[in-house]
Length: 315
Figure 1 (cartoon, helix red, strand yellow):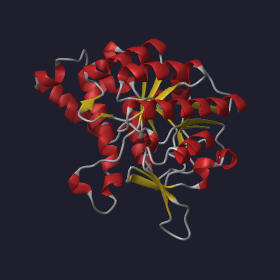
Figure 2 (figure 1 turned 30 degrees about the vertical axis):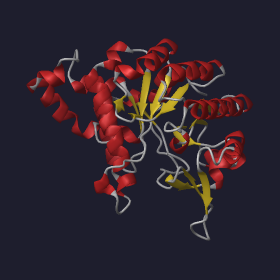
Figure 3 (figure 1 turned 30 degrees about the horizontal axis):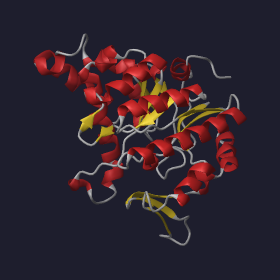
Figure 4 (figure 1 turned 180 degrees about the vertical axis):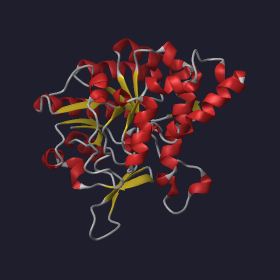
């Protein structure tokens, strides 16, 4: 079984954070006696720094115990550092990517990884993506945009041109929703996170950018957010409004089948609907391990999606 949605923080990354804690305003705060310290970067989106995030032996033990034979590791979104100056974000990206490449090299066949890039600077992000794939990574994990820039904006053209040339896996992972209406009852995470994916995925689909970059393999976290469930509404809009159809060569429901989606949905009926809607060759197992809302162990699913995403059969 595969797990395409896992997160890990290598030792070199942790050491860099400690050495540069003032530059990125990193804080380790004890919130509860029975839990590990919470890590905050710039006082935003703190999370419990569980041992599974940083202890590689524990990470691998848990994967094996869950019968996961191949895991794709990705950087944690809290360490994308898009809001910081280029020199900081680029340095962190390179250290993270090199560390992941070393883990892969030491565990052939058991691991793959997607790196992180300085997305706020698309030309530099393209350069770092190229470096990452040259040392064995499959692509990059990125947020749903930067500031007011959506991923379909020409602002990101240099990055996606390079990703297309490299046939990269681009794992689009939401950041925490900052809608002021959601500042209660954990809603920024419960519905804000999949909402960010929904907005991004809808924009990417309706922009027609997948026609411009047909060799980029876009993987959406958390089952694509709410988009697969509302695809009928997009198809109706496609029939009704030129603003919806003008960039597309087919109905939105057809484009939906050109992306990949993980199974981090916590509900079998939702997974079944996703598979029925996009096809089993476009859905891959995922867990979001070891975050609090991870699906653990990941749900078993057809291997067809894993094979199409990675371009080969993982034994």
